[in-house]
Length: 582
Image 1: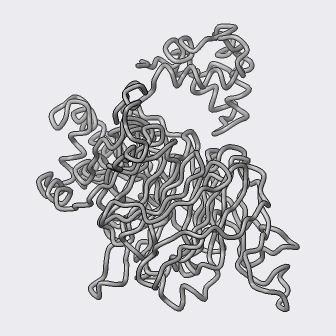
Image 2: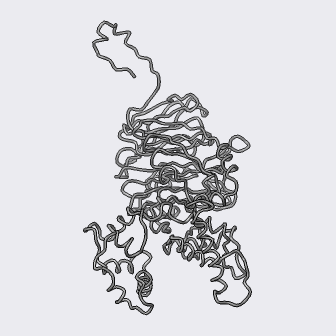
């Protein structure tokens, strides 16, 4: 790009003032990118200036572009690949036909119908696998449903996209909205394989996940223009941390994958209809920690032996909020040797997508006005996984001091102590060396190591040990955890960066709601016994006895009287709890 004074052109002939186009670029921030579901050489971008552009990957050229009536906030392409829909401005859905001279080659974009039923900027759009439904999530925290059906749901009227209704199901921003095939949990079914008759005929399942820690499933079949969008069930996915991304995984181990801002990935599976909760957490693993929490995760597709069918591969593609993209090899187990990362942009990554053949990942850099095309090569990740050797040694490397550090030495001592406690400290019978401890002792050991899980985290951990195939069970069905599994559970469940002073300050400010820097002891105890994992009066009394070194028969009033009238963050964390904050 050259800049020069305009007087330099005063003696040049007007007809010769013709520039040579070197490359096509963007005139505003790139907000979204999406790949064509059937053509691996085509992807589409959208910008803040409202320009929708279709690109050819093979030639790196623009196929066609159109200007829409406002900033483009999201894009999705119909599973059959002949229609794209964009979220434009404040809540407008703009349909765009992907046309071509023949069925094998797309050559132009044609602006089609508009739907103006929504009033907030649309942050995400997704089609159902069958292509008959479309769902959106917007900045107003609404999930909206559209159906390709007869107008007004009357069969004597033409078929078109109709607005079914919306549901304001979240109190905080929506993280993700996703459709699943109706037979999603069936064995050997892949989310990427959309040509199965059973998938098309089954009513799809719609999910949404929000920063309010709630995952909702909607009843698509019962939803209608008259009834609106119907909520089916709700699952709380987090107790303390905030969800950041969400994706389903198909196949024999079908599950919902949720990442949070504590660098963890949780796998959720559906329960039996008579169960108390519709979904339960079956595994918690450490996520990549290279560039902040994950903000998008997606299964990388692969081409079948026939060269046409697409299946889910054994790899996940992920991006972080800033700079980094990478891959993870499944099954997810927290092994750092099965992950990779690279710096893709100089700042925020606004959007990412993977081609339908799994050969390329495309990222948009937002304000750097660039779109990067990355070649997917799994050979390096496979080599890293092999060179890393036994995953148990990789977990040991994540502990302070490594394999020979103090942390692993302390854990061994506690592990032996737990075996003694399980058989009775004062028993005179011959000791049975099992090299395993029961599930309830695992929680006590983690607390001794300085990791204090909430009741929700304890419930998830206990359920994971119960359903894990790698953890043997006693004759009565109690999980028996060996040392290798203990290390794996500890590394995957504990907070990555421990307790920080900033976290303590944020928690205190949430309790006092910004009114000063101290909290009265009466208010603190009231909140402890009323919110979250609420403690009983007896539990508070017992805890304060230990913290204060009081007599075993000290009453609640006595231990409370020993507390300062008001406490700040430092007093709570260090003076009361005896914790060291970083």
